[in-house]
Length: 202
Image (cartoon, rainbow, N blue to C red; front, side, top):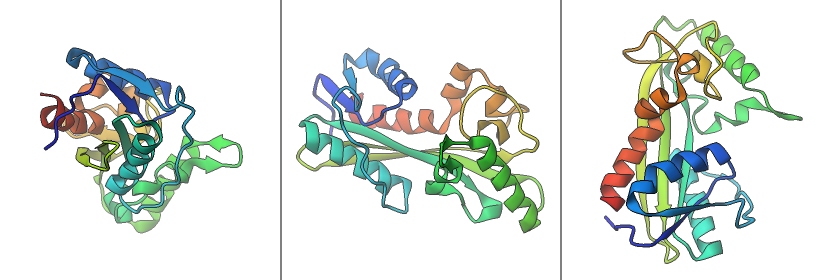
C-alpha cells in the first residue's frame, strides 16, 4: 500500500460540497486540497461498468493532466429488487434535457421495484469507491458501502440524490431526514474514507 507523502492533493470533482467535505477530513494530515474546477479540468467520460473503474478513469486523468496525486470517487445506489440497478448509472437515471431531476429518478426506481413485485423490505445499499492515483500511474482503490432499504413515499429534504428513499439499516429515518453531519459519519463515503486514511495517510 503506497502512502501519500505530498503536501497537495487534487480532488477530481467539480462539486464544491464534496470538495469541502474531503478538505475537512484531510485537515488533520496537513494536506491542502485543490479541486478540478480550479485547474480547469474537463470531466472525462465514465465508460466503465463498475464504480472502481469509473473512479480510476477520473483520478488518472486528473493526475496525468496536473502532475499531482489525484483523488476521485464514483458512487451510486444498488437496489436488490432491480438486480443492482441503477448502480453506476445512478446519476444517468436523473438526466433530463435541462439538468438532473432526482424526483423523477426516485419515482422511476419505485415504479420498477413495484413492477418487479419484489417483497418488502426492498434491500439496497449506497456504494462509494475512492481511487487515489499518482502521476506515475500507480493507484490505490477503496470501496465503501452502507446497507439499508428503499422506502416510499419519499421522506425528508436533506441530502441529495436518492437520499429521501434510502433508510439506512438500524435507523427509522431516511438519509433525506438525517442531519448532514450525522449522515456523513455512517455513509458509504465515510466507510471508503476510513479505509483510504488507514491505507494511505495514517
